[in-house]
Length: 134
Image (cartoon, rainbow, N blue to C red; front, top):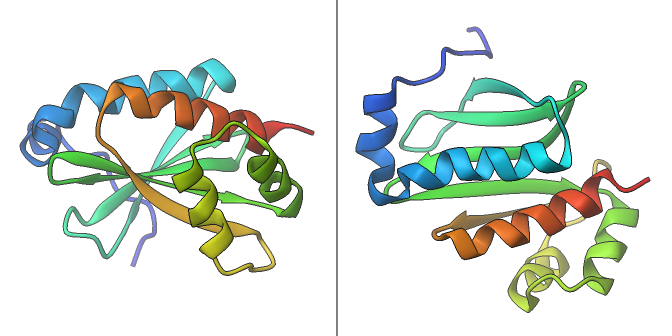
């Protein structure tokens, strides 16, 4: 079974995301402001949409985007240094709490949360700054 799949058609996106459709491109634009050029890689997932998009920079996955009904689910994994920077940052307390509750693995701590409005884009920008910091 191939791991990569084709990107979904716009009508499929719009049908799933609904009012959150404009946030999809804004989320990608926000990520590209931190790291460009980004590559979008689609993979199968066990979510109702059946696929997720990996935003990669130089073969390094920065974010996982999963279309969901009326929203976008964002996943990110931070290594130990990134985790410590996240806790010391101006990130919202809810995001910090997700990291504190996340189980540590060799590759880091991963969290997933919904993006429901443009106000959430600043959180994504902060997380990406933390992730790509040397």
